[in-house]
View 1: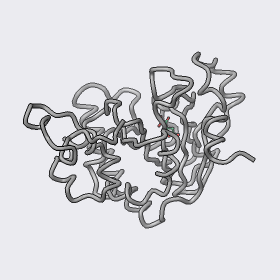
View 2 (view 1 turned 180 degrees about the horizontal axis):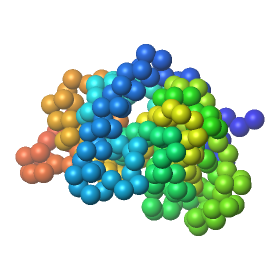
View 3 (view 1 turned 180 degrees about the vertical axis):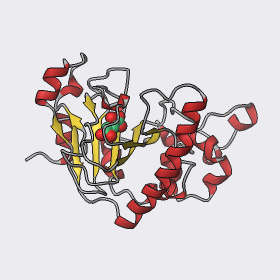
View 4 (view 1 turned 120 degrees about the horizontal axis):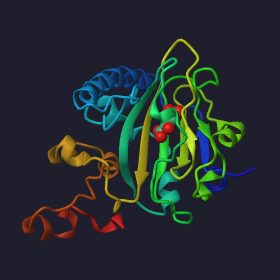
Length: 256
Ligand SMILES: O=C(O)CCC(=O)C(=O)O
């Protein structure tokens, strides 16, 4: 039987049941509802709402539980081993898989556009905020497809893909090269999840989270949350920020 690291390497994905406390899952669900409303109104205002139903991006500043969660995730050592060093969040989003809705997340896709077979560039973390079942659209994942550059044909993908099933509070990790798709939700209730990606610290974040939250906010955070949000891998914008002793540098020496 493969350990988690072996499973990530060979299959490209692994589910870790019951990782997040039920009270935290409740807090995340109520913050996600508000965050989704906020994202949806900007999607509509800017004319990018078509087929984005249910998706919420860069929500980390839209609810206190999103930052609080970072110091409660037990899988950080595993991700550090995966990258063989420090890492940061590249994107922090959510997805509300609505009954019968049609969203781009339901199409076969992978989440990193640069294909890198040997050195992992990015890993996805999906946090189940409801039970994931076959009926409500548990994620489809094609085992081994993180090692193949070409997109699989739709029929072959849906014939062979496995499903990520688990109780609320479980975590799905997968190599971001893995071809996957959200399942269609045939139940009557939304199926909610947080969708995060992580990379080595030198990879540009999709959104500048330290600036979004404010540099001063970082001083109040536990060390692990500061690291993951990217406070140790910021880019100086002038000479004064650049010429600093190592412990005060915006990009710290241990970030690769
Ligand atoms: O919600 C899901 O089942 C899949 C999410 C997904 O495709 C993604 O995070 O890229």
